[in-house]
Length: 253
Image (cartoon, rainbow, N blue to C red; front, side):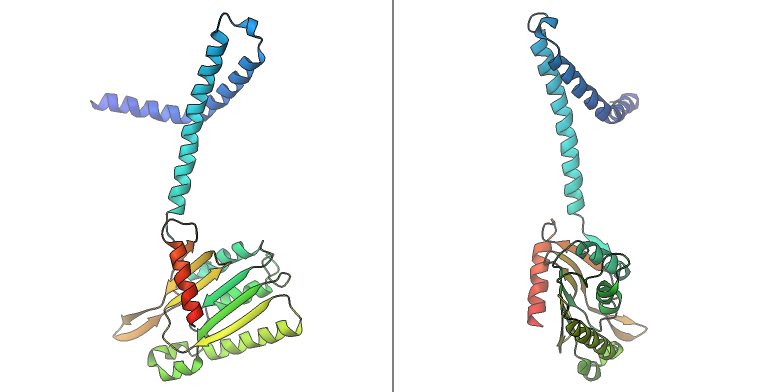
């Protein structure tokens, strides 16, 4: 096939794609007109033939459009989404804002990127209608035991966990005094962190893995400030398994 023929076929395909939807509307209108006209208007069996031909072509076009929609959805659901820690609040808030009984399980190290920038904001932010004070929420949090930040040199930079736990404890007491419909729970663990992140409504997982790297000759533990991968139970890249592992890790804590 020469370049000219290839270019002609390409232009024909592009023209068909552009004309496909308007042509489908035209066929729908034509099918309605043919159906509305009396049989006497068509000689012999030409009326039946016209109906069949119109519906057949319309069906082919609609099937192609539906397959395109299906492929788009499949591609979208099969793409692993990666977000920055600064985007966590927006993503989580979008999920819980319309829920009557939202639930969140959060595993962090010190809680700087989980409590202060996500959960605390969810509990007080009424301006964007994402506040949880008016619904029956259930939030469980797990942070590193402050004592371990003294015992393990690698965890020294996370010693802010102590003051953050005090903040959370005050919020828990306030919710208790207000007889809130929601529950806020805090646990501490005494081992090196592994899976960290948020499991929302047992269906959406924002997951990061704590890891160790060398920087300027120093060994550093990275945790909540890193990128997060977004999973759901219905995705095509192991979301259900990732959620199961996160739940197992949380239960162990």
